[in-house]
Amino acid sequence: MRNYALLATRLVLGSYLAVHGAQKLFGSFGGPGLEKAGAGFDRIGLSPGKQMAAAAGITELGGGLLTVAGIADPAGPLAIMGAMSIAATTHRAKGPLSAKGGFELPLTNLAAATALVAAGPGKFRLGPSLPRPLAAVGAAAGGLVMAGLLTKMLTAKPATPVAASQPEPAAEPSEDAATR
Image (cartoon, rainbow, N blue to C red; front, side, top):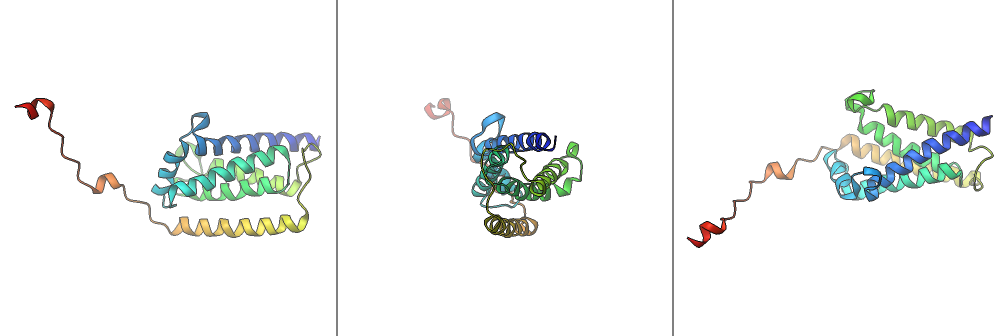
């Protein structure tokens, strides 16, 4: 029963995170794509937005696929933990409930990924786990990157809209006015 529960958790969590990453990166599944996602990252102070959105999308897509497959465990759930830590922090000002744009869903995903790191992938997986020393180095490196991004986000000032600070361009003369 335990192995089936771990497989179901990996499939649900990993699939959703992979789709979420594909939405950011490619605009798949009705997502914004990299340009719009990058603009959103810039608005919240994570700049350069396009590169930060690409990093988030790659982390979510890769972490999700690794989690689904159970390959190189615990790399997939660790990647999800990092991405969801940033996402939960991003939504902190809107409170705990997702109905108000809060951090409920990223925190739930973070908890599920943490449980998978602790429990392991179970016996239904496509590949071996990472050797313990490599997993520890990866977790430490990922933790440092996550801490740096969290620090940047918590200390960043939201970007000011460019359009609001520039005067509107003068209207071009119509063809009728130009021929008079």
